Length: 139
Image 1 (cartoon, rainbow, N blue to C red):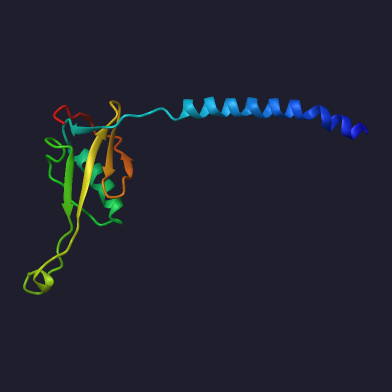
Image 2 (tube, rainbow, N blue to C red):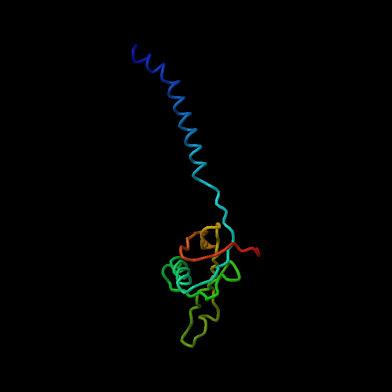
């Protein structure tokens, strides 16, 4: 009987504890998932080290394949498109007279504090720690 009386009195305490926990978790999850607004951005200026950071980031998405971007990349537009080099035969012509290499695009974004690069195919984001950019007002 003693056990039954303890169990009979605990549902109210248990329900109150569950409701309190759910309320705290609800408030905590809202506070931790702030809406971050990312906007298209332009590079303020691209130094050699900033250019290298962008190239390394894209290269990592390509599995380590080295890529080169123009020194004025992201200075006039927020997006850059890269096409992989076509496979060539011994005469320097595309194999089978064509190439079917897909285009890859990348977009420079900013939340007003930091610059991020988005892989437009996978939607992956990478922070560009040493790259300076500003929101693209032209978009």
